[in-house]
Image 1 (cartoon, rainbow, N blue to C red):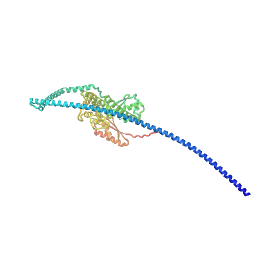
Image 2: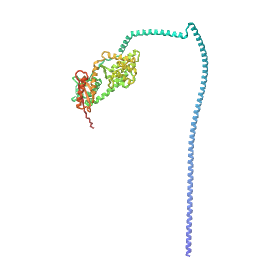
Image 3: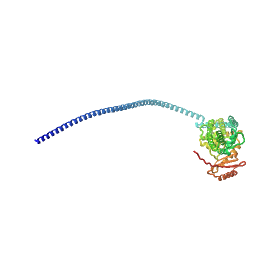
Length: 512
């Protein structure tokens, strides 16, 4: 009984368990079915969306493709139109060319017919000419060649006789009028050119407001005036002359530098050795700029164009050079104007003559010393800077150093003589005096260690500046003795020459 109950209980339990299991499986099947249905729905929605995107992309690509095709078709249409236009133009040109060819062919045929008629006419004329020549030969008893030869001989003799008579008459007339005409041209050239008298000297006067300024210029124990003289190479004479100081030097460039430097120092009020050197350097730079401007102004005033810049500088330096006491720039301007006037009277090129007249003495202002005559040196400089052969020859031949090869050369020589020979133009003493001072300075500069040399006091003193690193105190005394012996043995000079060798050592430091 108990077993039956137990078995029944177990069976009921198993039945309940099986029933619960089946119910659970059915529920799971329902859930899986719902999930699958949802997945199918999502897949269908995604599929539709992708299909729509693909259609839109296709439509977009199709539109772009159609635009590309339309653009290509438009370009092809334009190209086809241009080709048709060119073809039409070429066809028109071909038709025009064919028409011209036909016209040329007709013209050629007409010319051939005319040439045939002309040839036949020439043959008739030639036959007639031969028959007439034969008749003339029979009448005269001479052949045509013999008659021609006799006629040529007679004409040649007649022409020779007339030419000889004409040459003889021309020579006689030239001899009678050449001298008078030459004098007339020279006098007219001189009268038409205004000249200035030479006023060059070796002393300049510097005016000051009061005599108290003299003491400041001299400085304590004379250090200021010594610094100015050492920097400029000009002797400064401070005497009892009221409100004036004398600047003595043979070189007008140095005198001008000294005068302008003194003017700046006096105006500024600061006068001491360091300031002196600074001012002198600035003034030297300004003088060089003034030389360039003066050269440019001179060529503009004379109407000369295309001159090399180096030649322009040389023209400006002429202001500070003199020849026998005559200012070289004024002399060259005068020769240029005379040459232009005289060449115009003779029917030559006045511009070329004016150019040669201005440059004829550039050999006197070279940047470096040379032993060549100034005419030859000037010719070489002109050739170097591209002047014409006529100008170069006129420069080199104006003192007969070379042969004259053009009519311009004697004109320059004559005008140079006219400018130098007029009253008051030159002083022979000044030139020899300047040359002697230059020789003194060049002799001192030939020694090793010498940086500057200045001949002052009209050549009675030679101041020699030496480099302290190359020359010591003992060698400075020996150098002064050697220079004095060479001057005594090699040069001619009046009186005596004092040689002063200056050796200076400076120590410079900056306080910051």
